[in-house]
Length: 296
Image (cartoon, rainbow, N blue to C red; front, side, top):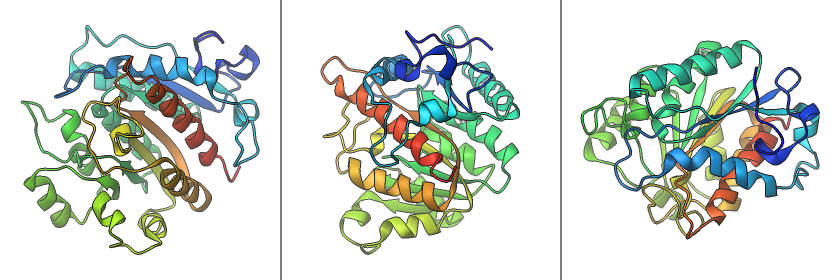
């Protein structure tokens, strides 16, 4: 399968560590942008993350490993969804993800808007029927329909909930009344950002999040889950979000105690006013890869 060269791939790594055949990890850039409702630019997110990743260190100081050289990371070419309908785009994302999983690859999807996570999660659920979903996000994304489509970024977790109710949300701080009611009726595990801050879950809120998850976990990470003081270059930056160290502590604990089987990083809307957001997204991607392989 064709992959990006050192000049354009994730981390800028040599061919012998980034070829498809021997790499355990595959970066799947998915520049989907069909339903964004406020800030635009997520279609440029995957390429921005790939470029910024060239300045991320190979060595991780926490894990004391160069996971990119141990496991290999191949990067697929960035596809063009501009001439495809939303449905055909989602179908293509599903097909690519399913084929990668069939090849035994660990799939990292870079967005693009959050709607792309539905077909990716669907493919993972077919391989791991007991899968739990960890959603880090400012928004519940549980609307049944938004602006005329059930496949909007604002509906992605409602579509996922049709496949499984094993959903844990962290960092939520914006939703409509119907979403709040959906959470209660379907017993979605939701850790609101404000409740974390005010101590509702106690000092060990991370432990409670981890306990809510099953053995196999898929992480969907909407970058607006971060506080905008850390990462403002996203479509709808909501105040009161998560910060770096607490988020890394959560993800690392999940990596230690559970089995992260795949993840996506979505909703980066690159801005010349804040290029650091691109780097933070790239760093997050590499940290999550490291945490996913803590037990191997």
